[in-house]
Length: 62
Image 1 (cartoon, one colour):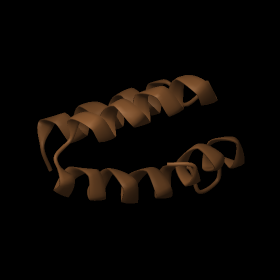
Image 2 (spheres, rainbow, N blue to C red):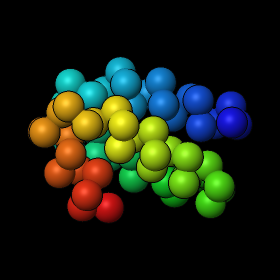
Image 3 (cartoon, rainbow, N blue to C red):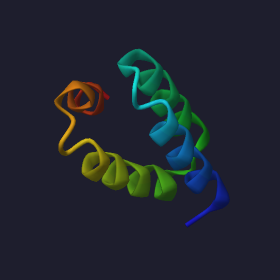
């Protein structure tokens, strides 16, 4: 796991209170991360939003 991936996971946890901010940061993370880390991030985000219906729509819109 790269430092960049850990960084974006921390950012996403911190901004998860706001759906639009979460969406913006998630898109930014996908832009900057290499393909392998994008896959790992998608798995992590899927688990992270499993109990958050407000954030699930953001994940499935990507």
